Image (cartoon, rainbow, N blue to C red; front, side, top):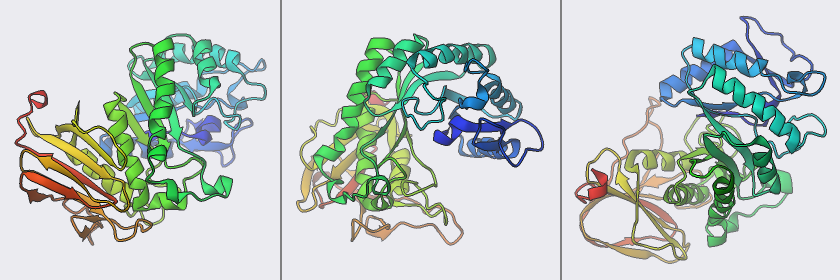
Length: 395
């Protein structure tokens, strides 16, 4: 789980039992011990180690403008003392954005100087934690400049991807693009840019997408609907096939792109898609044998938790035409659909997905499907679990 964002660049960690109500000079906010302990508790309950970044605003700097590691060190030491686990860190959030809290005139040379201090801190204080970078957003020349200035020493290359800015920043609504091949392919276009940088500066290192969602600036209103689940699951399939190890969706429960409604904590369609992916799709990626073509995308993984089993993700992004595939073996079928793509509800095999009255998740059960020709209705997403596939790569 990633705890970061533009706010983190200028947030003061109050490493004491009591914290001032106002941040010190050079910071915009305060993070208390109690709040960070809540992050640690959630991380432990979810069995999801933390990925984070550190403050880099003017309050962290000396008179010459050089970054001081004191705040970062305090957070690292407190996390370890409180039983938390940080898996990976980025120096700062999106260093290519001028609004990111950096001092005026901050450039690649200054970043390179500060990054070397940061890297030394990590090796001395938390050598087991992965160092990721540059954590930039978009395919911009600044990403190359920052990597060049920082020098080698990353454990993994990280980047952020959004297909566009949301309507709250542009005033333009574009839900008609949500199922288009051009829109879905933007994921690979950004990856191609960062893979080239990885091969140039840190060859062989893993690639992590540490922040993504439907659109930057909080997401569009239609990010709360089933319409965006096509982008989300297709993105997971594409990136896994391309070798990206980690994908972090922004956010869990904030703004329109949150997986949960931030007021009620009710799951949105993307949450149900993520839950099925986690339940069925293992970490070994296979060749589905079906090339991506207009409207039909098929991804194959070893089935999670089943030796020899295979799971398929079949996305029919065509709004009008059904598609068909032929299976050699019987499968358990899990089809996500809705009566209205712009609705916030989603059905699994015809039954609406929602929490139980107790607040617990329902069981996500498939329908037994015989081998042979299968039809996939327009604008549907289907997982197929084939436990008897006897795939040699899945043992």
